[in-house]
Length: 114
Length: 112
Image (cartoon, rainbow over all chains, first blue to last red; front, top):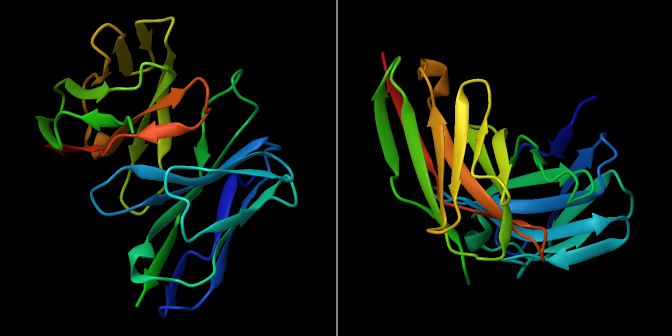
């Protein structure tokens, strides 16, 4: 049981390049989330998914797209990276709220956009 | 929009002392609250949670207190250890949106 895993762990992009961050969980959780964390700040929700095939916008969705084609995977895409998207990205998952609310986080992906 | 915030950005305590980390939230629709611990280079780790129908919940060395009247949340760590040094985040969940809103974090430094 690996929990929540994220790939890659670290990436450097040039402005305008695209990339996809992968989040995978093996706990059969219904809900999955993508957050970004900037220095000295808390986590801010980008997008989330309440089940396979569904996604919803969070607090800071602009410049990102997501897909949940399989229950265990949640992909975060940057179509045209900007320096403002330099951040640490965390994925999280949770069983079906509201019975179980606790979110389990992955180790993070550090992204640097030059 | 409404957000969760913290009173103190850095807290320094002596090993063995008790620590109290405070948090204020503003969303009156929040009904679930979590404390996370984040060590350098790692993702947030769940510590303890509490629902809005409770005002206190205890864990192994931690206690969370919730005061809904003043929208205040606190985390108490008993007999603080060097391994407790980390950034602590409070977060609340809106009963309608089912997504967490995080505070900016408090860094706890434990002095030997």
